[in-house]
Length: 87
Ligand SMILES: [Zn+2]
Image 1 (cartoon, rainbow, N blue to C red):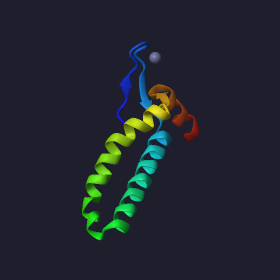
Image 2 (cartoon, rainbow, N blue to C red):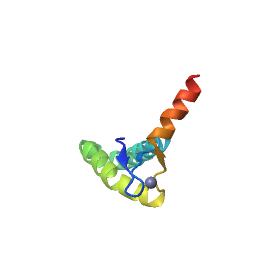
Image 3 (cartoon, protein in one colour):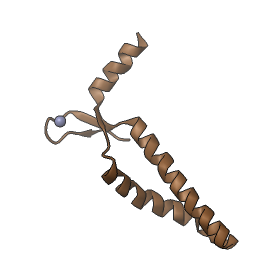
Image 4 (cartoon, protein in one colour):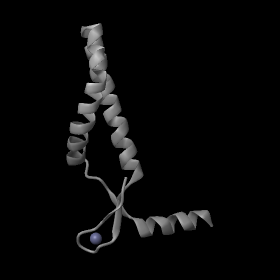
């Protein structure tokens, strides 16, 4: 995830890695479940798997972010934390 500047305090912010990981796994599982349903209905529907994954990732991430708001971390604080764990 690319860091961006907070519109209020201008701090560099980034979406937490754990959140991004959880989001991707959830969407992957949802897309797989849909593919499985399609596969059971008709083997050839599996040809649509890339389309299913594409649509689930586009719309799923919008819905997911509405249900569970992305936690933000400031880049400065995070790099400090990384330095502390390295010591
Ligand atoms: Zn701010």
